[in-house]
Image (cartoon, rainbow, N blue to C red; front, side, top):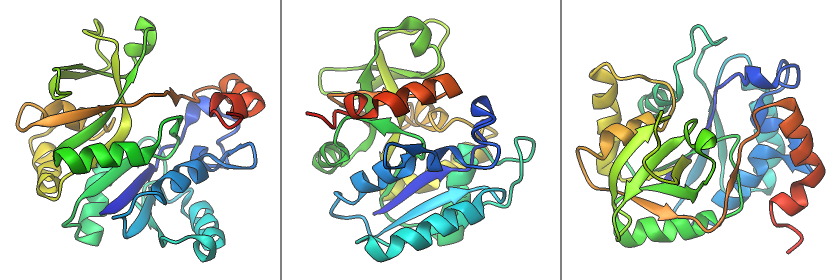
Length: 252
């Protein structure tokens, strides 16, 4: 299995913080956001390497970060520059996933996660669910706030946690089950990402692909006993930095 971290966005909502620093490399407490993710990936037994896809503007930032971290990591870190420079020529998250698949010739299970995800559940628990089901797996978080749900992918699940309906940013959410940007895809699903793009579907938000996928094959969701933290504004980032230990459950 390869672990792919999506880090090619420009996070313009966080300006001026992200003008010269990519969002995943912003510090939260003693380390960068992406370090918390890598720590979780390190707990997965089948991952052979961690790949970070970023844009040309921030590629050198991630390469420097990877060089500093590689000697202390059990898994090698690889940075891939998608060659884009701004919001006008970006590939989109799904476009970046396909770019990495093409560059590396990926033909194995693939875990994909957004590089700015801060979460309180254990990635190993989601991995165990995926390995038990051997089905494409999404992460499901309970969210009560309807306005927040409208900004996310929202799913309806059956009693076995199979996806019955999934919509990206619905105007009328059907449930309180939010799907965040963490995915485990089977080897045989990987060619379907190209099919999705070739059909002319949007290459943007990564949640659009599973919204298409579940109508074509069984997709399941791991109900995570925790939360994901969205850092979307400088004010929000300041609050997370001041309270990160409590938010991430590091004091428990």
